[in-house]
Image (cartoon, rainbow, N blue to C red):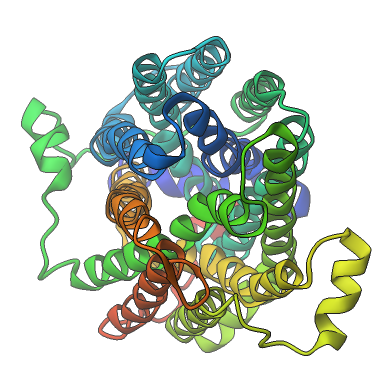
Length: 467
């Protein structure tokens, strides 16, 4: 017979009984804030701020160092906090204290960032922001699969994806409005406010009644080095999936990170606030298209993956991302017919070449939406319920590591080839780095093939009875 501690996750999942759309939405609300924060900050706020601080000649390298150094803490810290929350036993819950403290700290550092005027201080504040945000994020990830039955993991994957993408879309739009007028401070304040509001809703309305599994070791070694010790024999499929996630997200993050530089240097070259604002607006258009399409496909992708399997859907995601990135490699050439580009150019008052780039965002958006939905549910299928916090935190090694690796590699390469002239009709760095992103998508697609997908798990009797 299972022990009381071992059955705690099942009791927590049963706390809400039937899980409808409203409750799935509430479970996903903090993902809205996370999606807003990290996508808009990295794509729309940091690039122009850094360019102003260090100049165009060093912008790629400076952005790589900043985000690589700051994001490194996410790779190490988030799994550890997740493991600690798995073992926490407090009356208020084992996830809520970390979510509350992390969200409040994140908001504080965003406000401080608005007053930073030198690159060194920006580097320091960004590092602290990563510490605070990841303190909240790993325990928060453990709430979802604990509060719902296993049969709803696919549906929750869709809401997880939609929450993240809705936050991304709202963030791109709101941040785009502020940055197009040069008000980066207001963009940061809005991110801070959203974090606080979504945190309050989460910790007050989402049940957090799980207790630690009695079999979990609680020593210092178990929650530090032990957190990163995952047996390849026992969890080989999970590790292959992490490799696939790493490469595909390297392509996605790379495209988001260098979109603003691409528009500024290729379509709006020169200095001046007006040109920078035009580039910011073009970046907002592309990222909004990707986010809208990704949101639209989340729920259908989840239902299809429930029926046909997660792995085939991940393969489709990687192929779509590669197609979109390949289009950007040859963006200088008129690949798409004018019947597609002319109406978009006229509607948005942008060059036809830029309109073609926005069309290339379509397969990227569809691929991203499918991937965020299906990959999360795929991970939950493969990991032990007693350690949701640890394993989902560990998955951030792929998530955050994608940003570190993609930016550290692409930033210096971008600066080097930009200084060397044109390739395929553009500043040389962009076809090179976009070509690298194509390779990431393709390799990530191949890495998912060895994953052994488990059959859909049946609901446990205790969940049936409690529901």
